[in-house]
Amino acid sequence: MALKELKKTIHDDSVTFEFEVEKDEWQKAQANVLKEYAQKFRKPGFRPGKAPLQEIKKYVNEKEVFSKAANNVINTDIKFFIATTADTSFLGFSPKISIIDINKNKLTFTANFEKMPTVEIADYKKFNIKLDSEEVTDEETQHEFDRMIKKDIMLTNKETGTVENGDSVNIDFTGYIDDKEFAGGSAKGYDLVIGSNSFIPGFESQLIGCTIGETKDIFLTFPKNYHEQYANKEVKFTVKINSISTITKPTFDEFYFKKFKLSDVKTEKDFKEYLKKQLVDWKKHKVFENFQKNISEEIIKTTKISYFPKALLNNEQHKIEHETENLAKKAGVSKEEYLKSLGYTDEKLYKEGLLKTAEKNVKFVCAIEKIASELKIEVTQKDFNDYFEKVSRLYGMSIDDVKKQYHRNLTNIEAFIFQKKIFSELQKFYK
Image (cartoon, rainbow, N blue to C red):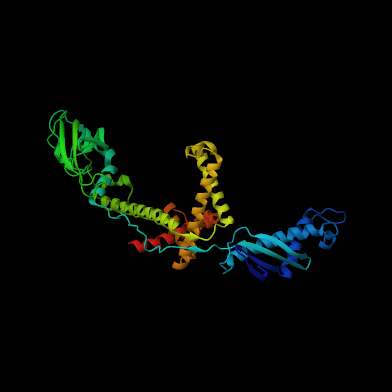
């Protein structure tokens, strides 16, 4: 870049810079435009594209050359200025450009940017947020194990006999609290493995000894850590046994576990350890997702912003509309039909909702930028390298191939890495 900053003026809601393009760069920009004309220039005595620039100047409009050259050089230099300046007083979006002076030796112009709004953030380390548990119990691991081997299990119907621990029973049940049915407490034709601990304590054990066709009332108390509206409440279940089946499981040897194509898994213990690790990773991911959602809501709710810059609002509104159009296409309906399904009955209502969402997003972005600055969070080349290496392992590609495939998405990748880094750092305050 060859821009010389001549003056900076701060207004109420904007910042104006006056620049001068260095003479050598400005003349080079004019020459490049003339070369473009040269490719199209046709005149007897000159081969196509070979006419000297002085000859071409005789046949082109000088103001048109200045205009094209100015457009090219200003676009390039302003982008570089925005990307490299340490000045944080303005927003690097869609500056208004005005030419002050332009001739073959000189180009000066102004660039007017919207002013960075004043952002006040709450103490983001002390929101009332509790992290969910990342612990995986043996019961959860067993449940996942049973799910994975389910299709290899054989069920044999019992014609006579009673329910035993380990049997699969098909039941109808209805739950009552204070002699009234409650939501989610009833089902018909439900398959339950006795001893799987799928139901609250005492439910499965009280079915042991029942016969086919028998109906039994079971009296229990919901655990204190159950759903809040039911915790510690007494409940009665009326249960009918429709059928009883014995379960025959396959032999869990090395040959059986080969089907899962896991090189380190040779025994039931190995497989359960593998499943537990997967469940831990999944829980950590869900805990992180929930934390992101909860702290984002708190940040938006508590952040104060002096004003909403038009450039940021327009940018957010454009992104939301683009996403809405894509979702409508995926749903196979028109944008209007999709909006109606969301409750927007007319365009005015939609625009109002669009503006409110855009304002929330702008407030969040400004707050996150300030938090990132306080926590000194930035995306480094190492972060990019780690990301490419992870993708390489995941898809079995070379790192060079990954870089080639993703080189056009670097901006999105940077945003993804930045978001993960800042929320990971924020999560530390709540552990």
